[in-house]
Length: 405
Ligand SMILES: Cc1cc2nc3c(=O)[nH]c(=O)nc-3n(C[C@H](O)[C@H](O)[C@H](O)COP(=O)(O)OP(=O)(O)OC[C@H]3O[C@@H](n4cnc5c(N)ncnc54)[C@H](O)[C@@H]3O)c2cc1C
Image 1: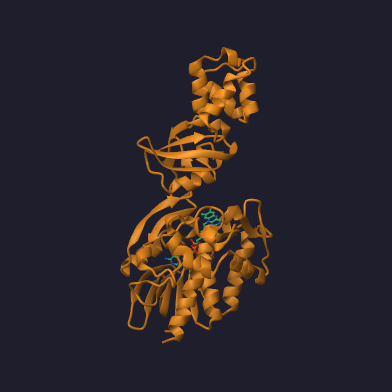
Image 2: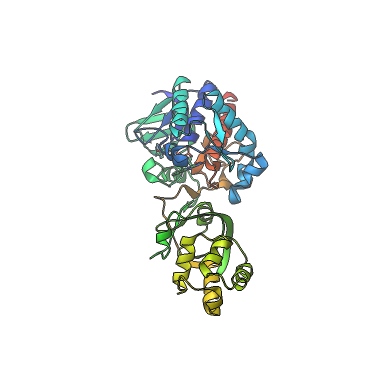
């Protein structure tokens, strides 16, 4: 049986980039992929357009990985957004930057990115075996014995790049956690992150599609604020989404509530607006203030204010109700599950992985890259960037390890 220098479990962006880099370093590489095709999640990333990184300095990038920012630092500094953009350019994939700093392939086609990665993997001589789920790994004296549903393979080093648990139909079902656990690693409880939030019997469902450029959304637990974000917000037919919600969602728990200030204005400011120019219609004055008519109509319906009411005819209690609905709209929420989560919070415990090499601190020759680690980034290209940056460090260390033997 051939013993490979490196077996990579998972042909997502982390696994494919690692395969190309390791094969370029003259290592014999085998990529084992569970699904019938590699990179299923990459294909749907950024709504099929693949927002693969974000503009900014490395210092700025690392701020978008929550409490994982210290761990990601060596990887991001070693292979940053500029390196990734240049890497794709050399592969024939120029990129474009959108207004908000997101970086995409110029064609806005994730398939171009995936095809280039797969072609390069094969051209460099790395093998990809599809429909080949890994079901067990054992450490041997010479390296690793990897059991799949179709055969057994051996390698000197092993890279686990199986992704997290989100969008399980793409192949990321948490297998990497089980494999790492059997090798003695701790797993931080995986939870859905970057998910929409749902509201039972959602009163605003008719406003589905309405968005706000900068809403202030607070997550409340037992009435106390847990976290707050001021970012774009989207109303959906089941609740809320958009960056403000996606970013809060990693901290949301069953029973939590959210408080939405749709235009991020002080309630006093809105009250002052409703107290002057009393001859005007309530509806018109709120429109002048900046609220969309559909939301005004909904708020007036909730507060039982008739459409033709003038400000002079608005009783104090109804004025207060309108202000509350527009600046402190409160709902109990449910978080969507892994089926709709873009990423997984949790994963391989970072305490047991060297951030400079991505090598296990428990088992020599075992490495991790990408979302399988307990790292999740914000929306905007940070998760794919980390998949590449961590794979880069892992392969650098693998080559060093094997050539120094
Ligand atoms: C809808 C959606 C949109 C997204 N958009 C963006 C975006 O625009 N920008 C961004 O930065 N991030 C985005 N993400 C997140 C990003 O796609 C992931 O963070 C990234 O793909 C992680 O890469 P990975 O290589 O670590 O894992 P994955 O891409 O999940 O790949 C893991 C691979 O391992 C394989 N595998 C799993 N278990 C086994 C096993 N036992 N044996 C063999 N193979 C196995 C899987 O089949 C899969 O192919 C999005 C995610 C989703 C779901």
